[in-house]
Amino acid sequence: MYQPFLSQLRSDGGDDEPEDVLGALNQVMLLNWEAKVKFAILVCDAPAHGRECNDSINDRFPNGLNFTVEEIMKKLTEKNIDLILCHLKATTTKKMADTFLTHLRKLQSNRNDQELLRQIELYNKSVVEQIKPYHFIFVLDESGSMSGQPWAALTEAYNTCLKERIKIAQHSTNDIVSVIQFDSEVRCICQESALSSGTPSLQPLRGRGTNFSPALKEALRVLNTSADSYIPVLLFMSDGAGSGGPAEMTTIYNQYHHRGLQVHSIAFGSSVDKATLKKIATVGGGQFHHNSTGKQLVETFVQISTELTAVDGLIDEFAQRVSDAATTKLAFEFL
Image (cartoon, rainbow, N blue to C red; front, side):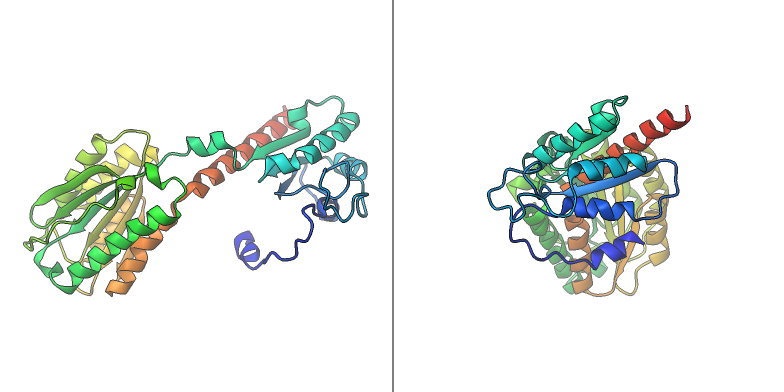
């Protein structure tokens, strides 16, 4: 409901740095608030207009616009709405936050500062540093049916995936990569190679039969030796039908889902055993992808790697802080 709406919004304007924050909060008062526990979440990278909220020499409205901080804080208090301020640039919004607190203290003298105004620094350095890097584990089919163009497409997908990862991921220098190639047998090409050192090369295709079971057992071995400080991302790719698979993936899931394990089961081509690949994704709590062409394969690999960024950790932190605030408020109201 909310995501489609937000995705259609476009930012424009700008001019001076301060924004009509107080006008936006006044719009909040016009909503139909029915719940007993109410939160307004303000996300901003700039302060409100007016000298009481900012020291910007470029503020076109140094005396404010239509509302004062006192008026808005009084309205929030009267409606029993708790304000959560999410700083994108804490240095530019600190004065505004301090002014909000000054007025809220006068209006609600029985509450402490944290209850009056919960503040979240979305790009706080300590939060970003706590975000775990990823361990990409590629389990790639090198059976005979992959020879020629399919292997060229897979090699391109793999290389492009990691190059894009290095380019866009905010903490990519801490990610590590392991590569397992399999046909009727399995071999670990590299284990826990630092992505900052470059993309590990795939070995030339051997081209024999297909056996899923030993490949996933090798993936489990790699996981068992990996440090807990990494979030495992397992990409299992095949173009054929092999024995085993779901049982081994079930074991992997049971042992590593608590570490945030992410599984992607990728079926390539028209002759692939989609049913087994789907089941591998299902028991691994992951996603199934079917790619008919080499171009689609490249797109899938790139999408998987580029969607994993520091933003994920920031979202988790944001959700946790809001959840904590709601829990505290509920306890205060009902216990």
